[in-house]
Image 1 (cartoon, rainbow, N blue to C red):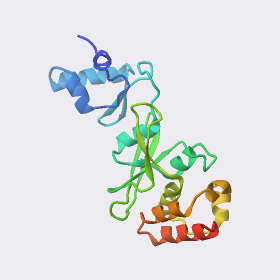
Image 2 (image 1 turned 90 degrees about the vertical axis):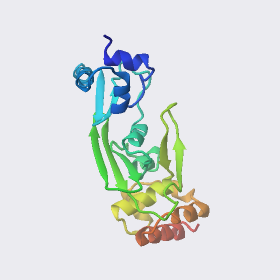
Image 3 (image 1 turned 120 degrees about the vertical axis):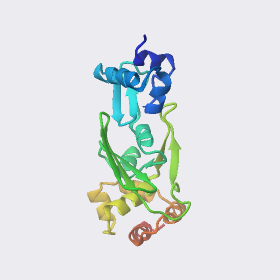
Image 4 (image 1 turned 135 degrees about the vertical axis):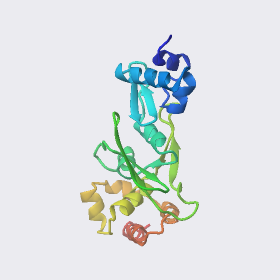
Length: 216
């Protein structure tokens, strides 16, 4: 009888993130027998458990490196990368962010600690039909797409989640260490688009003050 690892590779799922349903579809026998095969693959470090019900083959079997941003999209479907992770991605802040920060439309905030790092999902109430405004689909690695906030959307999300009040441009350039050149490149259209998203008076006030300071 071939191992679970063999079956995953034979099925062409080498680089896939797999659910319990996927594994059950690959395996024959009783639930106890299927559990035994999964447990054996985990103990041999051939299969990695990301969280309950979500697995991936070990790196030595995979053909490509797993994108953490893609993994975030599987941990919380319909979420998008935002806050520090998006700002770092675009080079707006100099730090490399270890924790992957994302936004979900509803439900409680979530936090996952996995073999691939820490993932935090913040909940964001928005105006109807505006959840994905300023959010784009990105696919750096073929077959591993994710949703990513634009820099201004990520900044506005940051203001909401961290409850940041407007403190002037110095807060952005000194505390967050955002290069002023990035801020100056934003245009009025971007501000109008992102302002449609929020109900929060704090965020809207912040965006209005930023826009005025930049003379957009």
